[in-house]
Length: 161
Image 1 (cartoon, helix red, strand yellow):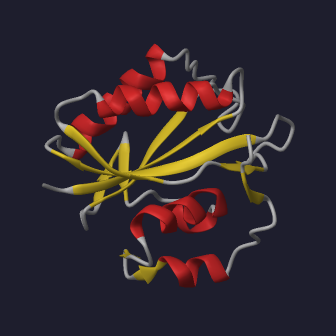
Image 2 (cartoon, rainbow, N blue to C red):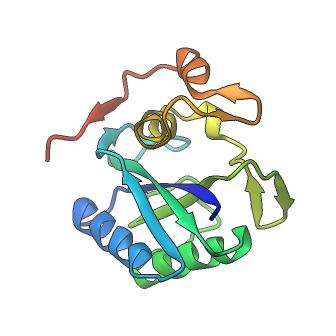
């Protein structure tokens, strides 16, 4: 079965509780098998600094779903947990955010889905937990450890909550 990584984050409400519910909803899907769950990290907001800190992490899954179907499943989980998208605030606060980081070695470029995630190598809050679940994997010709060396990791701290 194909392997995919899904990054997750929350900075509104019961952050930990929402993340636990999101992971449970994904795991309850018979077409998704969770292989690894990273520790949770508390991180600085990215893109819009005027908001609360996030709790972020990543899961590695095997799935029978196509990339588009996996995206639809993630969006359904987000909606069920109260995610409201504000087009005026693309990087604003959110109850839950689920992003497919990679799906095997596939490259996808569709209006609603780009794989690997186009900003993967810019985001320490994704790369740190991704290394926890995927090791020093090569994605799009780049090793995760090499990408991490280029980033400031000071805003990513293991969450002690």
